[in-house]
Length: 233
Image (cartoon, rainbow, N blue to C red; front, side):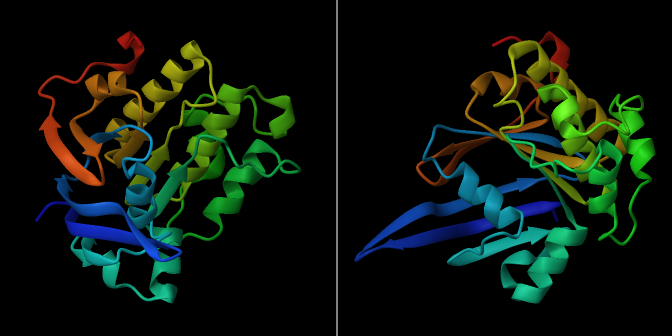
């Protein structure tokens, strides 16, 4: 059994009297430890996919499995625990608490977890050992995103979800963040799913899921993924 499985998943929203299928029969799988890029244009269903995989939304039909458990059948309470213990989130906008230091932001997340990693150690791993006591306003955009990544990793999650993590960053900083995600996931053995509209990012993935009109149009594996530091777009 694959680590992540989508089995004929549909998500339908009611828009007045009209029903819109944001995800319409999506099927794919991901293996443990893979760095996965989910790519597609705006409106293809990428964010809906991420919200369901992250336990922030539930499918209308079909099944979503993580590590053998049927997430799509969870109760509201079970979904809360799932988000808390199993999923690490990294967003386009960093969502840091402005009146807490970098260390305190990471500690805040680790306090709600079963088996967290030491916050200071994780910040050092992402290159911010010298910024532990700085507030977000004292950090660059790239540094703030590193704090956000450290916050997600400190939870010691089963799955790391990154939604357009370079979208608010300049080119060079964006490359550095991609490299950090790629290297950290590989060294820690974490499974990472990165959502993007940028098709160039597929070159660094172990597995590429191309989304079109609410479906997985194709699923490909890269025998030799590029290192993010040589990626160009």
